[in-house]
Amino acid sequence: MNIKPILKNVSAKTGVGTVYVGVDFYNLSSREQVFFKTPIKIEKKYWNPAGKIKLHPNRKELTDHLNREIKEVFSLIDTLKAKGEEVTADSLKMTKEVKRVGVKDLITLSKEYVSLRMDFKQPMKRKFNNLITRMEDFTKGKKLYYSHINQRWVNTFIKYLQTEFPKHENPQLRKVQSPSTIHKSFRLLIQILNHYHKTGLIDDKFKNLNFPKTFRQKKMVFVEDEIKQILGFNPPTKSLQKVKDLALLQLFTGLRYSDAVKVNKANIINQQLHITATKTHQNIYIPLHPALVQLFEKYNYDFSPLKISNQKYNKYLKTLVEEAGVTSKAEHVIFKDGEHVTVQMFKYELVGSHTFRRTFITNAIIKGIPLHVIQSITGHTTLDQLTEYVNIADSIKAREIHKMNELFKVA
Image 1 (tube, helix red, strand yellow):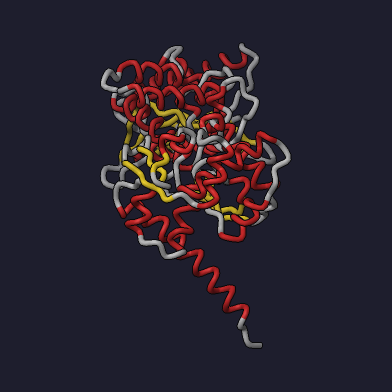
Image 2 (cartoon, rainbow, N blue to C red):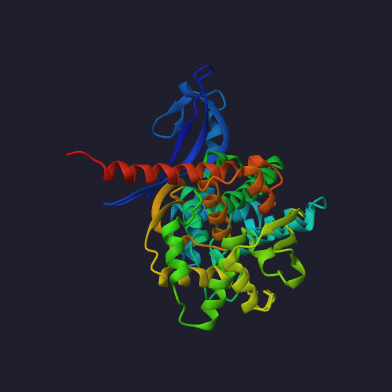
């Protein structure tokens, strides 16, 4: 370990730079550096590369100030050694942070920020509190200070958010976050950091970090052959059979999960399913598919007994599709080291409560059903909302045409 003052950020116009106290950790395999900014600003011509001030009119005063700054760094090192902690770049920065802001770590500051925002409505408060809860779980009881927020922390936190913890004692923390939700979580964190930067409590180095960026996740649907596989599968248990039946109700109606589980006999009028969408409050009218008549009779026109938590439904759907023998893959975007990475995943890994609604819409477009008819069935408020499904349908058509090209390929 080597400690040495260094002049940085020298202006090309004025020749004035800022003095930092640099601490260099190095061994045969790695090297770490940390720089502590001082209030001392000086022209380059008065700075000796060896880390000393030369020929300056106020040389003695500036040198005394610099020595106090160096002494403070040694004091940080002594504090860590006295606690029996390893002296590293991160531990030095954390100790410095504690001395500067007292006992307030970033999680404490985040909670204070939420309590200060009296304008936040409950849904927004829940989002911030969910982020704070995940940060607390991620740190496993250790203090999280602003000095910890570097690119390595960001990348590791992203990996944590993408990890499933099915047996976690807190049900809210069992599920993975989708890439779009991860982006939103970091936007909340940035909002907190911006607040404390404006108050002068922290610097703006966090703005140089590579946080997850927004994007639209590629949507997965089942094609006709895969639908036939699922339809022909005979689940080995009653619970999995109920999940299959609920999925088929979505497949043949395009209903959202929240609407599918509330269907009952009162919704059937003149061989049509009439229901008001929970999300959009749109009145939906759906012609009954012949396969649905048998399904309705099986449950005596009441699907409420099929209702389970969305989390369990998603879990059992994965089992259903895998056991049905659907082994094809689809592209999926994840975050890795702060970047978007496209990977191939099995469809049974990606299936969720919205997949069969999405499959209904996409296959309806492929079969040539007019968009305004599909809109009246699905309850979308505008035709523009179906554009994404049109793009999915077009990509499926392109793949099928490619198969035809292969079939008639001339050697």
